[in-house]
Length: 193
Image 1 (cartoon, helix red, strand yellow):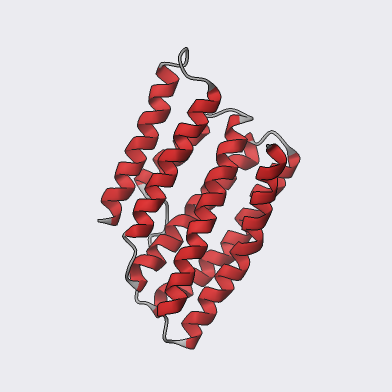
Image 2: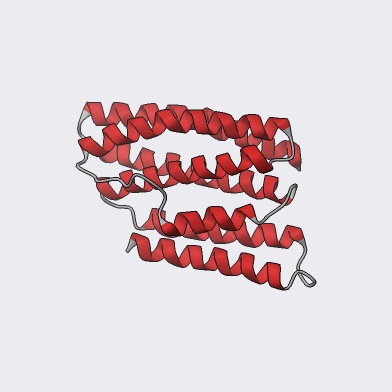
């Protein structure tokens, strides 16, 4: 069920980007950016709604973190400012530690996690690579902020359900790593407005 919603979100995002590139005379770059962000938000909302078991929440966390990392790798190359490139490097570094903790969490919840992005996730990354600065910068920050907030919310829900104190500790560590990163992203968003 999660993959179905995720795939539908990817289709919406891919279609939006393809449509906007084919009909650029009627859509501004800002509209393209908004379409991509809305499609990604809908995809994450669908995923979050479908995550009820601990295993689903852990899978959501790994998918979210890997997506953030891949988008940040793209941002290292495409971002228009050094501050945004620095942020993307910090996201990559933090997420390496987060992935290690999620792997521990996956073991604790008996969840099998993939080693790489899904085909659908790669499609999102490829679609966002089509954007140019400053639209790319805005889309990257908005998607990153939304994704990180949903990840934190998802993990906090998992904490509430976790009975094992070690599991709760792992989840709290991940949230503690993500929260300052989210605040930095939101601050950069404010600066761009």
